[in-house]
Amino acid sequence: MKTKILLVLLAAGALWSVQPAQAHHAFAAEYDEKKPVTLTGIVTKMQWVNPHGWIYMDVKQPDGKVKHWTIETSGPSQLSRRGLKKADFTDGMSAVVKGYQGVKDPALANGRTLVLADGRSFYVGSVGGPNDGADR
Amino acid sequence: MRYFRHRHAAAAVVLVAASLLAGCGTPAPEGTPAPEQPLPADPPYRPVASIREVMNSVIDPSVDVVWNSVGSDIEHGRITDRAPATDENWAEVRRHALIVSEAPNLLMMHNRPVAPPGAPSLAPGVELTPEEIRSLIDKNPAGWYLFAQQLQEAMKPALAAIDAKDSEALFAAGEKIDTTCENCHQVFWYPKAVASAR
Image 1 (cartoon, each protein chain N blue to C red):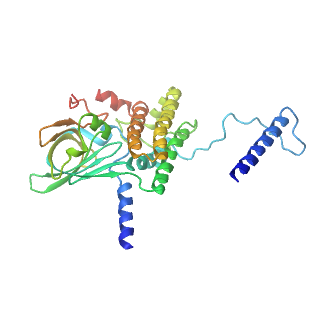
Image 2: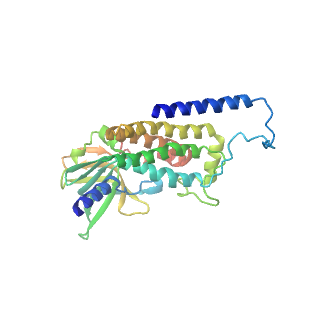
């Protein structure tokens, strides 16, 4: 019985799981276009949800410590139209994300491009980002 | 039984309508207080929250429930789809979709302030001040109403998907809702940020 209750709670938790930084704001209110970042690491999780996708990535720092990054992407339907698929996020995959660091949260970034280990590159930026040519 | 209830209800509606029609053009019966002043054109709304508070406390938390109810989580290469699993889950999502659908009516009420008194821009230089937003709304009320009603329109496919318990359709409706929010925000909330990004 306890196991059943636990499973129900886990299912409910998955259904109603909270996303980071959901509120709608202007790009420049949340991300610093003067702080571009290039993150090379291991993708640990991808949330394929509206209104934005979220990539979770472990990036090894110069001091050897691992920093856990949360990267906002455009909406999943836009990602699909640009050719990215859920199945592209394989177990333990490495990737390179270029984007901009969060204003308040140094482990948050807005992704502009995602390059997979096989070399395929995708524009993953959302509306309102800087005119940096990443979408061309 | 339901048939008889409907018949009784219909009869009651006809009686009320008939009595209202009969009352038109005739003096009020004695003892009925006559209104001293004509009724205002709008109901006497008394807004409690500002537009910012309606956004943050009513729309945002509820639209998040609608958005987050469907989608996928991919971890260790395993894709786990999200979807309401039970009738109660669907009912919960529907409650929040209705809140988002009705909230634009709150936004269109004339005397609702943009933000609490003295509140600043939440992102100075990027997002407008409440006074600047007020000015934009007052200059373009038709645009403001249009965006509010577009949000209601964008919610219709979501509500239909919920009623059909169709998680894929609800997922597809989510993008349209986001686009509608963003279109309004770019005009009334952070037009400077949009202009500088171009």
